[in-house]
Length: 382
Ligand SMILES: NC(=O)c1ccc[n+]([C@@H]2O[C@H](COP(=O)([O-])OP(=O)(O)OC[C@H]3O[C@@H](n4cnc5c(N)ncnc54)[C@H](O)[C@@H]3O)[C@@H](O)[C@H]2O)c1
Image (cartoon, rainbow, N blue to C red; front, side, top):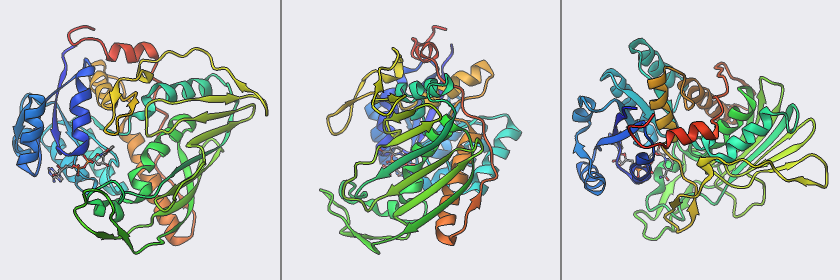
């Protein structure tokens, strides 16, 4: 398979993981990078032996087939639109865009030009979440009736040297980390039809304690605790608790409850972790053997912990799908639906009224162990 050329725009924090992990996949090859700050592009290029260029040069490069948009959320829509206008496919980090209107315009332009649009998260393609998908699809818990998901912490000012953008519109726990949880709920339970929520902003300002820090405090312009109720087209319902005002909690990351059993899932922010199945009140069931390449530990995180990290698998799947002429898993209709769910949760929290969701998507295809293995084959092999 001829790998498609990838050009990265946005050479910050997460670009390192993409540059480290992209070589795993046969369908992609990172060739160039650009940033509004030329020094950031130069530094990433030197580190990984790729070409540094300006954003305009990258968009005009013949060897770039896909623009990988790793800029800050507020720049996602503009940069992705620029890539489409330049005739490139585009894959964006989450959140895909900040409004339904931005996303719809982008998708319309891409479809006119026959180009693909994709977006993170791709963690639902991880081994544990695919095991959960397999269990749901093989009726291990019967029809799914309800779910809970929780993503709650003390916020960002304890580790990020300059966390201002996290606390402004476009940030907050729903848009920043919500994509992982909502996308995984949708891959397991299908599309959402209505949301309700309540939200609060307990602190007008956050004191930055990160070491080192670039600022002493940041103002807060978006809700930092948002609890939502989601109604799915299937009739199932879910509770989603998100907060950056929680000292510590012991809620499970995600649970699904079906007619005949319950399923406990690991944190959808990661590719692997323990999956548990209960088919009676007392007994946890031993799960069937489920070898999946995207559950294998392969990465040492900045904090020294070892994890399964298959970031860029969604991008690689999009490149495979372009070759094969099939739909990619981290596709535009899934990403747009998740954006509508997230922005509607915020609207519902502010208005106090339920909000109907108008977009629909189908669940992305499951990713079998064999398909994941093929994605990891050496370049040049089919
Ligand atoms: N850092 C993480 O651990 C992480 C994890 C998952 C997802 N993400 C997502 O990835 C994206 C990037 O996050 P990050 O942590 O790398 O941010 P960052 O601030 O470290 O890097 C963003 C980079 O984009 C550049 N940039 C901003 N506007 C630009 C523009 N208009 N044109 C060109 N370059 C521009 C900045 O100069 C910066 O180098 C965000 O959407 C974030 O939500 C980050």
